[in-house]
Image (cartoon, rainbow, N blue to C red; front, side):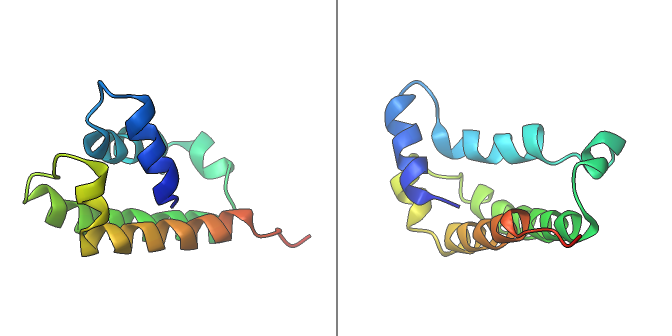
Length: 102
């Protein structure tokens, strides 16, 4: 959700193709709803927020990948699909950071 952190990551890890890394981190490392331990870590509202973000990321990501993802984070940030992803990530993050009732 933080474009500045994305730029900093690209600068601090020059050997990585950061646009690809940003995609792989979510799909490979972060979202595993089929695992019981993953589901146990989140409330139903949080699980729904993550599922909604995953759907958005999948659709927008496919649109971006069809154009080759780009050479840099600067290119990625100029794409309307990435703006939707950043907005969706912010929304999911706000749900995850919200106090849980009870």
